[in-house]
Image 1: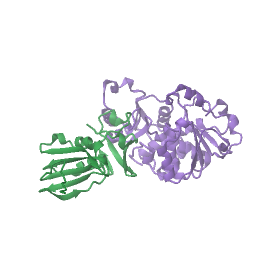
Image 2 (image 1 turned 90 degrees about the vertical axis):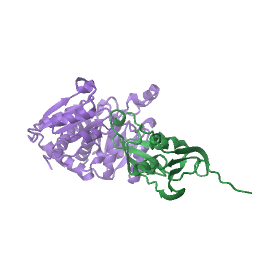
Image 3 (image 1 turned 45 degrees about the vertical axis):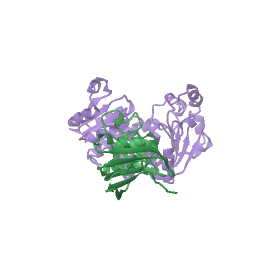
Image 4 (image 1 turned 180 degrees about the vertical axis):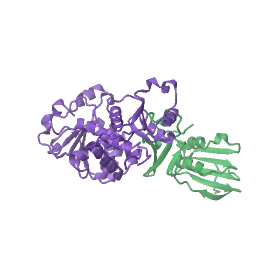
Length: 303
Length: 154
């Protein structure tokens, strides 16, 4: 993976996912390693982010690297009208690797074409967020012991949620069964259902939580966002239909874990937090190990 | 009774004839081939009856021959078109319209949030074929532009 970019989850193969997860596991055992000494990592956040940015910074700090960059483009030359190309080409002169988040879709792919150093995409608008997907895979593997043959429930906004789309693509390598639970306005788009059909992967669609949640190995919840609805009354109708409550977990499998990319609003009730099946905060911690693995593999410091 | 086959667009001695263009995309083909920049004779007609297409268009260009890039452009906008090379009033070659696997710079990405619509970046697509229809998957934003949304890059 040395000198590779990480732009889209589909850029990497199943074996490469597994390699990243294996190295992430090493970092979980020994998170502080001074292997990035002398390296400068650029962290360019053209739009604000909390978790992703802090978890990258935490990963780099634990590896002894230095970070340059900005946390919002307001104080940079972008405000003066500098093109993305010029910003990237300049920052590439100062750094060994660029991590970028940008609101425009495809910006990271374009940056990788003009940059002399590798680019890691930390989210390009509604398009891709591959490091989130890899930390999701890590969390699934760690809690289930395997990625193979799992029953994965995806809940909430399945239409616009980029994390669920990437997860479908990545998990399709491991013979899963999917159950989709969403309001009908936010159903899984046809192109992803066709993708699953072509691969011979079973999926089932539901409009509400049902008893079949007892079959789940993973319940992956995403936020139903108010701004996705043109009619506010429609939003009010569905927003409470997809709230996961502790009482609903009674008959679920002992190995079942609840994941959420965060931030959460009300789609997982707070009484779930103390349940052993709630995994979303540890999932956020796993982001640090996974990002340590990604950076060190791309810089050729692990292989 | 005498049967007269009248030519609706007069014949050319040497050049290229593009026939069987769906009438709805005739002007797109004229634009994409940049025929306004050509100094030889061009004749074209539209809305001719066609059994296959309903209404079709035809373009005749004197003394000019298409290169691969031109044929690629035609194949994206009018995959059913026929391209005939004319020498001394006779068809000497039928250029095959083969849809390429990738196309660049010809069509715009329909996604307003795509980098190609926000910065000075040329479009690049992977060509997807399904049931005779062509769709284009953007190399950057990964969204799919369907044929009905094809807009020519100016």
